Image (tube, rainbow, N blue to C red; front, side):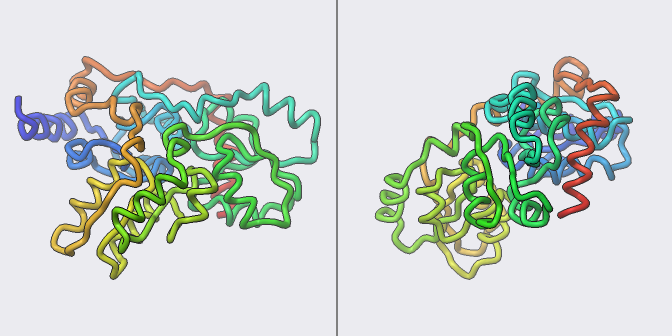
Length: 306
C-alpha cells in the first residue's frame, strides 16, 4: 500500500470505529496529516477529553497516553506503538520523591507533565513547559522540588529567584545532547537566523537563544515572526512541520543539531497506526481508579493555578 492508501484506510477506520487519533508534534508528517489533533502532550489530552469519540489512539509515548487516560478515564486509550517510552519520564520513581518529601516535608513537589502516572500520584502540582514559570510563581510554597527535568527546572529557578528550587539529576537525553558549541556552529552557518530553543536544552544553550519556549510556542513564534530564517533547538521533526506550515512565506528552518532526533517518537510508523486501528497492534493503557484519582489531583491543581 502507498502512504496515501494507508492514510485513506486510517481515515475510514476512524469513522467506522469511532476513534479519535492524536499525534504529538514530534511524529512523522504522514501521521500528523491523518490525526484529529496534533500538538503538545497536554494539549492532546485536553482535546481528547472534549472529543465525542469513546476510543482514543495516541501517536506519541506512553506517559502521554497515560495523561489522556487520567483526563478521560471512561474512554478506551491505546498507544499506537507499545515500545514508545520516554527516558525522562522513567528516570525518577515515586519512592525517591517520597524520600525527599520525608526529609523536607515543607517542600512542594512540582512534576513536569513528562512523568509517569505513578509518579504524578505523589506530586503536588503538574506543569507544562509553557506554564511552569507561571505556576511555580503562584505556589504559596517557598521550597520546591522540581522533577524530573533539571534543565527546565533550572530555567524556572532563574525566572523565579524568590523560591528555593531543588533539582534532581534528570532530563531529556535528546535535548541534553546539544551544546553551546552546536549553537556557535549554527550561528556561523546561518548568521541571519533566529535561534528558538526548548527549555529542556542545557542552560548554556538556553542562555544563547533568541526565544525559549514549548514546542507549540516555538512553532507559533516562527509562524508569526517577520523574520525569515530560524534555527530550531528542539526535536528535528519541528523543522519539517514548520516547513509545511509556512509554505509560501519564504521562510527557512534549520535544525540546531542532527542529534535532536528522538527514537521513541520516531518508532511509531503510519503502519503501526493502521494496525492499531485494525486491532492488530497497539496497547491499551490500563490505570486503576486509585492511580487515576491521585494523579488527577496534581493536574487539577495545574488547571487551578495556570
